[in-house]
Amino acid sequence: MTREMTREKTQATRPTDPPLRSPDPWLRHSDPNANHRNLCNHKEVVVQSAVQHSVLIISPMADAPRIADSLASSLGCPVNLAPTHRAGLIALRHHDYSVVVVDDCLAEANPAAAEVLWQSFGMAVPVQINFAFSGGARLAREVQAAIGRREQQQVMALRAAAQLLENDLKSTLTGLLLQSQLALAEPELPPRLAGKLELVAELAGTLRRRLEQAQA
Image 1: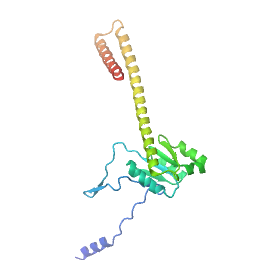
Image 2 (image 1 turned 180 degrees about the vertical axis):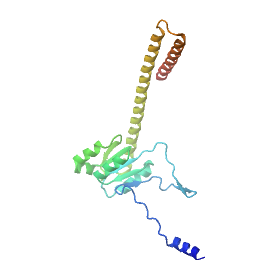
Image 3 (image 1 turned 120 degrees about the vertical axis):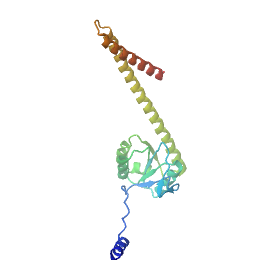
Image 4 (image 1 turned 30 degrees about the vertical axis):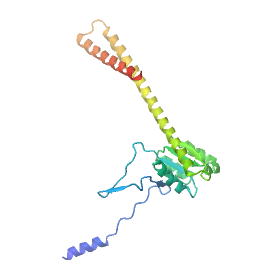
């Protein structure tokens, strides 16, 4: 009885774990799904789209958090907010964004820092806009158009990569087919080896014709 009372007292006085800190205290996150979450068996379930875009806003404006929340709700994608050049650079090192929105006041106040920031965008589409004179509707249109350009660039890059791969394969198969035919033309070729070379030549020719049909 004494042991059970001691165990219950110990469990009652055991301190709870402290809340985890955000790994990026300088970065503000706007979650478009925050108001659309359901609890199922005490687990959070978030439905995301197949292609998930993300936006980074770099602006020191006091109204920037509200704009980021509104943009996340309008576009249905995560929007992060960085208040300074340095915070923006750190965010770009840790995550690949579809679109990066830079406030005009930051770009004009420090052109050198803005140039360094511009060079760090990677594949993200840049959008420079004056937050002081632009409303949320205009910003949403600008970012939506930038996302469309990003998707078009991705499609073009995939097509170019696929075309390059097909050309390389066709060239390799052509060389394999030619070398097989030259080997078959050699005199005194053992019948067993000739059969294998004929099979290789036939397979190479079939694959090459399929590639040509796919490119037609």
